[in-house]
Image 1 (spheres, rainbow, N blue to C red):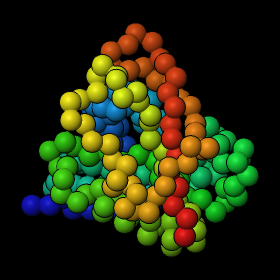
Image 2 (cartoon, rainbow, N blue to C red):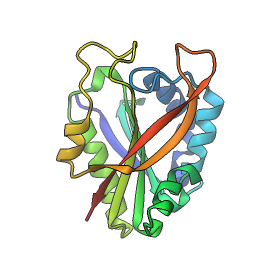
Image 3 (cartoon, rainbow, N blue to C red):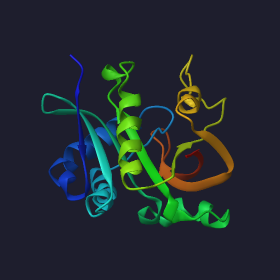
Length: 195
């Protein structure tokens, strides 16, 4: 049976924060993020969404178990490091809704939930009057030693949704990979959809 999709806004997400933090940590350990995170950091990150009156968190629920989630908020409310590439490029940030991450337990992939996450977030952004939506994804080397054999990036999926990569819009974040002893800087490539 397909998971139930539930869309939450702002403070409605508070009761779910611990479960979302655990899911994010587990899913982001996989390629391409290879993220060795902490529950405290994840909860703190998610509290930005809980404190925003215009944010959205889309849950995929198997009964009461959270098997996936997707997030978004106005770009002007996102981390300043996400905003800076748009400031530098001369965009009006007030017209852009930023899609945070989508995470989905591996057992539930390939069932159309990625589309449902985008549908819900785009509907939320449209209801708020945003003409543009964006997200970013980590860029990894093709010859990275932890790249799984046969890995297929999501580029075609994103293009079919109307998003185009913007090489001129990149952010840089540091985190500790699962195979490293310290944080390293990562390049995040933005993808933009214009109405």
